[in-house]
Length: 212
View 1 (spheres, one colour):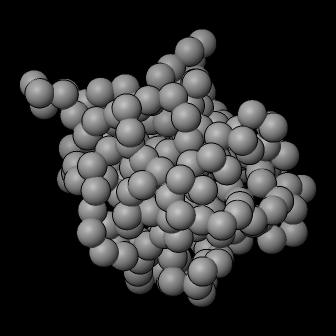
View 2: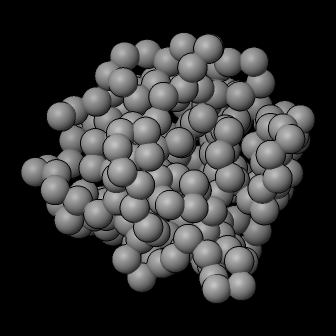
Protein backbone atom coordinates (compact mmCIF):
# COMPACT_ATOMS: atom_id res chain seq x y z
CA UNK A 1 0.00 0.00 0.00
CA UNK A 2 1.35 3.41 -0.92
CA UNK A 3 0.40 6.03 1.62
CA UNK A 4 1.21 9.68 1.08
CA UNK A 5 1.60 12.16 3.90
CA UNK A 6 1.84 15.88 4.12
CA UNK A 7 3.41 17.89 6.92
CA UNK A 8 1.33 20.92 7.81
CA UNK A 9 1.84 23.67 10.38
CA UNK A 10 -0.45 23.29 13.39
CA UNK A 11 0.00 25.77 16.25
CA UNK A 12 3.76 25.68 16.85
CA UNK A 13 4.26 22.07 15.87
CA UNK A 14 3.72 19.94 12.81
CA UNK A 15 1.04 17.29 12.58
CA UNK A 16 1.56 14.32 10.31
CA UNK A 17 -1.24 12.53 8.53
CA UNK A 18 -0.61 8.84 8.08
CA UNK A 19 -3.97 7.79 6.72
CA UNK A 20 -3.43 8.42 3.03
CA UNK A 21 -4.89 11.94 3.23
CA UNK A 22 -3.74 15.29 4.48
CA UNK A 23 -3.05 16.17 8.06
CA UNK A 24 -5.51 17.94 10.29
CA UNK A 25 -4.70 20.52 12.98
CA UNK A 26 -6.76 18.43 15.37
CA UNK A 27 -5.16 15.05 14.86
CA UNK A 28 -1.96 13.35 13.81
CA UNK A 29 -2.48 9.65 13.26
CA UNK A 30 0.45 7.26 13.44
CA UNK A 31 0.69 4.53 10.85
CA UNK A 32 3.27 3.20 8.48
CA UNK A 33 3.69 1.06 5.41
CA UNK A 34 6.52 -1.14 6.54
CA UNK A 35 6.41 -0.24 10.18
CA UNK A 36 7.84 1.77 13.00
CA UNK A 37 7.17 2.59 16.59
CA UNK A 38 8.98 0.56 19.17
CA UNK A 39 7.75 -0.85 22.44
CA UNK A 40 9.44 2.00 24.27
CA UNK A 41 7.32 4.55 22.43
CA UNK A 42 10.16 6.23 20.60
CA UNK A 43 8.76 5.72 17.12
CA UNK A 44 12.11 4.39 15.90
CA UNK A 45 11.95 0.72 14.94
CA UNK A 46 13.91 -1.74 12.91
CA UNK A 47 13.16 -3.10 9.50
CA UNK A 48 10.72 -5.60 10.89
CA UNK A 49 8.88 -3.17 13.16
CA UNK A 50 5.18 -2.38 13.10
CA UNK A 51 3.45 0.93 13.51
CA UNK A 52 2.19 1.59 17.01
CA UNK A 53 -0.83 3.20 15.40
CA UNK A 54 -1.40 0.42 12.94
CA UNK A 55 -1.31 -2.63 15.15
CA UNK A 56 1.25 -4.38 17.27
CA UNK A 57 4.31 -2.62 18.57
CA UNK A 58 7.62 -4.34 18.30
CA UNK A 59 10.94 -3.92 19.96
CA UNK A 60 13.68 -1.70 18.65
CA UNK A 61 15.71 -2.34 15.54
CA UNK A 62 17.85 -5.39 14.96
CA UNK A 63 21.07 -4.69 16.73
CA UNK A 64 19.46 -1.88 18.72
CA UNK A 65 17.39 -1.63 21.86
CA UNK A 66 14.63 0.49 23.34
CA UNK A 67 16.86 1.09 26.33
CA UNK A 68 19.61 -0.37 28.41
CA UNK A 69 19.06 -2.60 31.42
CA UNK A 70 19.62 0.44 33.61
CA UNK A 71 16.84 2.40 31.89
CA UNK A 72 19.14 4.74 29.97
CA UNK A 73 18.62 5.15 26.22
CA UNK A 74 21.11 3.34 24.02
CA UNK A 75 22.54 4.78 20.82
CA UNK A 76 20.57 3.68 17.79
CA UNK A 77 22.39 1.15 15.62
CA UNK A 78 23.82 1.98 12.20
CA UNK A 79 21.48 1.61 9.25
CA UNK A 80 17.99 2.77 8.26
CA UNK A 81 15.27 3.04 10.91
CA UNK A 82 11.60 3.64 10.13
CA UNK A 83 10.04 6.66 11.83
CA UNK A 84 6.28 7.15 11.74
CA UNK A 85 6.15 10.24 13.90
CA UNK A 86 8.46 12.35 11.71
CA UNK A 87 6.89 15.81 11.64
CA UNK A 88 4.56 15.22 14.58
CA UNK A 89 6.89 16.96 17.02
CA UNK A 90 5.13 15.24 19.93
CA UNK A 91 7.23 12.12 20.59
CA UNK A 92 10.45 11.55 22.49
CA UNK A 93 13.43 10.23 20.58
CA UNK A 94 13.86 6.92 22.39
CA UNK A 95 17.23 5.57 21.32
CA UNK A 96 19.85 8.31 21.22
CA UNK A 97 21.23 9.26 17.81
CA UNK A 98 25.01 9.34 17.35
CA UNK A 99 26.33 12.92 17.28
CA UNK A 100 29.45 14.11 15.47
CA UNK A 101 30.69 17.68 15.01
CA UNK A 102 27.54 19.17 16.47
CA UNK A 103 25.06 17.27 14.31
CA UNK A 104 23.35 13.90 14.47
CA UNK A 105 25.43 11.48 12.41
CA UNK A 106 22.23 10.51 10.62
CA UNK A 107 20.07 11.68 7.73
CA UNK A 108 16.30 12.04 7.55
CA UNK A 109 15.21 10.37 4.30
CA UNK A 110 11.79 10.49 2.61
CA UNK A 111 10.65 8.21 -0.21
CA UNK A 112 8.13 8.77 -2.97
CA UNK A 113 8.29 12.54 -2.56
CA UNK A 114 5.69 14.30 -4.69
CA UNK A 115 7.31 16.94 -6.87
CA UNK A 116 10.83 15.61 -6.37
CA UNK A 117 13.67 16.85 -4.20
CA UNK A 118 13.53 20.50 -5.29
CA UNK A 119 11.29 21.66 -2.43
CA UNK A 120 13.04 23.85 0.13
CA UNK A 121 14.87 21.72 2.66
CA UNK A 122 15.19 18.69 0.37
CA UNK A 123 18.00 17.29 -1.74
CA UNK A 124 18.57 13.96 -3.46
CA UNK A 125 19.53 11.19 -1.05
CA UNK A 126 22.96 9.66 -1.44
CA UNK A 127 23.32 6.27 -3.09
CA UNK A 128 24.50 4.81 0.24
CA UNK A 129 21.40 6.05 2.07
CA UNK A 130 19.16 4.86 -0.76
CA UNK A 131 20.72 1.41 -0.46
CA UNK A 132 20.23 1.38 3.33
CA UNK A 133 16.57 2.41 3.07
CA UNK A 134 15.92 -0.09 0.28
CA UNK A 135 17.46 -2.92 2.29
CA UNK A 136 15.42 -2.06 5.39
CA UNK A 137 12.19 -1.65 3.42
CA UNK A 138 12.61 -4.97 1.62
CA UNK A 139 13.40 -6.69 4.91
CA UNK A 140 10.14 -5.27 6.28
CA UNK A 141 8.20 -6.84 3.42
CA UNK A 142 7.99 -3.98 0.92
CA UNK A 143 8.33 -4.94 -2.73
CA UNK A 144 10.13 -1.74 -3.70
CA UNK A 145 10.95 1.78 -2.55
CA UNK A 146 8.99 4.63 -4.11
CA UNK A 147 11.01 7.24 -5.98
CA UNK A 148 12.29 9.89 -5.72
CA UNK A 149 14.16 9.50 -2.47
CA UNK A 150 15.12 12.76 -0.78
CA UNK A 151 17.21 13.84 2.17
CA UNK A 152 15.98 16.55 4.55
CA UNK A 153 18.36 19.34 5.59
CA UNK A 154 19.54 18.98 9.20
CA UNK A 155 20.23 21.78 11.68
CA UNK A 156 22.91 21.53 14.38
CA UNK A 157 21.95 19.75 17.61
CA UNK A 158 20.42 22.26 19.99
CA UNK A 159 17.28 23.27 21.85
CA UNK A 160 13.67 22.95 20.78
CA UNK A 161 13.41 26.74 20.96
CA UNK A 162 16.22 27.13 18.42
CA UNK A 163 14.56 24.62 16.11
CA UNK A 164 11.19 26.37 16.37
CA UNK A 165 12.79 29.77 15.73
CA UNK A 166 14.77 28.69 12.67
CA UNK A 167 13.85 30.18 9.30
CA UNK A 168 15.24 27.11 7.50
CA UNK A 169 13.17 24.20 6.22
CA UNK A 170 14.90 21.39 8.10
CA UNK A 171 14.82 18.73 10.81
CA UNK A 172 16.47 19.03 14.18
CA UNK A 173 17.79 16.61 16.77
CA UNK A 174 17.11 18.43 20.03
CA UNK A 175 17.80 18.11 23.73
CA UNK A 176 14.44 17.66 25.42
CA UNK A 177 10.99 17.65 23.80
CA UNK A 178 10.21 19.30 20.45
CA UNK A 179 7.63 21.56 22.08
CA UNK A 180 9.30 23.58 24.81
CA UNK A 181 5.92 24.03 26.53
CA UNK A 182 5.20 20.29 26.65
CA UNK A 183 4.83 18.56 29.99
CA UNK A 184 6.43 15.46 28.48
CA UNK A 185 9.94 14.77 29.72
CA UNK A 186 12.28 13.76 26.89
CA UNK A 187 16.02 13.25 26.83
CA UNK A 188 15.97 14.01 23.11
CA UNK A 189 13.61 14.22 20.15
CA UNK A 190 13.51 14.36 16.35
CA UNK A 191 11.72 17.55 15.28
CA UNK A 192 10.99 19.63 12.18
CA UNK A 193 11.06 23.41 11.84
CA UNK A 194 7.92 25.45 11.16
CA UNK A 195 9.26 26.23 7.68
CA UNK A 196 9.55 22.55 6.81
CA UNK A 197 6.07 21.95 8.18
CA UNK A 198 4.71 24.81 6.10
CA UNK A 199 6.19 23.28 2.93
CA UNK A 200 3.57 20.48 3.18
CA UNK A 201 5.91 17.86 1.76
CA UNK A 202 4.04 14.80 0.48
CA UNK A 203 5.84 11.46 0.74
CA UNK A 204 5.28 7.76 1.31
CA UNK A 205 5.29 6.44 4.86
CA UNK A 206 7.37 5.73 6.78
CA UNK A 207 10.12 8.34 6.93
CA UNK A 208 13.59 6.98 7.62
CA UNK A 209 16.47 7.96 9.86
CA UNK A 210 19.70 6.59 8.38
CA UNK A 211 22.66 6.59 10.78
CA UNK A 212 26.32 5.75 10.32
